[in-house]
Image 1 (cartoon, protein in one colour):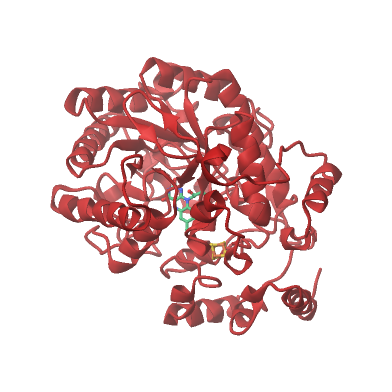
Image 2: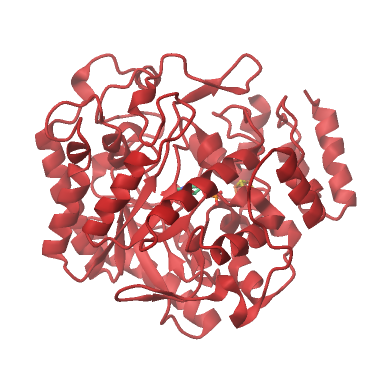
Amino acid sequence: MFSVFETAQTRDRDNAGGIEYLGGLAVDLFVFREESPMAYPRIASLKTHDQFISRLAELGLKLPSDENVQQGEESPLAQPIQLKHDVIGNRFCILPMEGWDGTTDGKPSELTRRRWKNFGISGAKLIWGGEAVAVRHDGRANPNQLIMTESNLASIESLRHDLVAAHEERFGNSDDLLVGLQLTHSGRFARPNEKARAEPLIAQRNPGLDPRFGITDDSKLLSDDDLKRLIEDFIAAAVRSQRAGYRFVDVKHCHGYLGHELLGGHDRAGEFGGSFENRTRFLRDIVAGIRSEAPQLEIGVRVSIFDFVPYKPGNDRVGIPEPNANPKLMFGGDGSGAGMDLNDPSRLMSLFESLGIELVCSTAGSPYYNPHIQRPAYFPPSDGYQPPEDPLVGVVRQIQATAKIKQMHPNLTIVGSGYTYLQDWLPNVGQAVVRTGMADSIGLGRMVLSYPDLPADVIDGNVMTRKKVCRTFSDCTTAPRNGIVSGCYPLDPFYKAMPERKQLAALKSDG
Ligand SMILES: Cc1cc2nc3c(=O)[nH]c(=O)nc-3n(C[C@H](O)[C@H](O)[C@H](O)COP(=O)(O)O)c2cc1C
Ligand code: SF4
């Protein structure tokens, strides 16, 4: 294991190589962070495209990457996508990312607006949902999550206005900008009232997760009638989203939240569990209701297309699979707990096609129980575990799984996720993926928190600003896990200057 001292030295070497983001104050945050006992070469150390390709080869990974990234109108990443009723101006998408910074009654704050304006100036022409917005109070993942109630409609509408206005100011118009809203119920991960108090509402018992929530009986199980009422709440929130000017809603089915847990509901009895038909009833009924109440509104689904069992830190803090887990409950899992079988997810895609759903955003796993497959990172969040594999493996797993789904369902418009760990090589891989039809759009998560206008820089052919490249320090996840608003504390000058940065540094040094 690297010592703290060696970690700092390693970073000094990078500084000498010109990575300014490690300079000055930044170091006090990082110096307490341990590197993985499994020391993987850092992406910033792969200085040439050849070195990046060699590292992929060493790991036995198949990933296309273009040595030269094209700019301007000819760029594969600048090509529009024609949907049935809409056009998306290019191949970059901003993935939903909440900031744990809404008001307690579920309205956006100034921090929320700043983030959405940054999404607007990014240059990406598809905004996938902005952030998770609860359809009702008990579905909030934290007491500061937005809620799409009648009384919040106007402020959530003005959030969209802010984003579109920022986009128009920078790029002249918003004719080919598509903006949706992500609707959610957090289910097992609900914390609606207090940051520190989990109030789970679950789809089924799960031996790998229940002990983490203190669940010992069926009292937290949502009944079929509960789910039917919740379906009505999703439909009502979708209707409000349309009134607020959103062009589509994402009926969220990913990351272990309720919709996703239902997809893996093999152990659930009744109308919403067991068979594929039952496990997708929640989604189908919501879609049918939206079609009837808001026929002009488009629908997308963000789905974890495969899942592994929950992981936990082993003796050396490297992640290991939870021994009590039941692999059968993982949607898109192969039954081993750490492998995928895309048959069920492919069936889900066929269902989307039959329901007239064009937009799919593919992601994987859950940020809570297996973050190494969901958002590959060099440094884990404070409640995580050291990566059990080179994070590049996790990136390629998601890209390849998405490509398989795209190959089987070429008529769907599919956005991929999990690209941020590629760092300096993200544009090279993104271009190659789009050029070869492995996905239609490149979704950006953490990278736009640290480098908001990366898409515009890539398409304009500007040299990437290395000091803004996300190095997957995970502070944007560690902060909210400790009750602090999320943001890129290491690299975004705005968050760097916030008092919360010192609070974060203090809790990391205590840890
Ligand atoms: C701070 C933060 C907040 C997030 N919030 C959401 C969310 O509200 N909804 C969602 O579907 N995914 C959310 N995600 C996951 C991202 O959309 C994305 O899938 C993930 O970060 C992997 O993509 P990346 O490698 O580009 O970061 C969040 C991620 C981060 C880092
Ligand atoms: S966006 Fe910032 S805080 Fe989040 S992982 Fe990247 S560098 Fe770290």
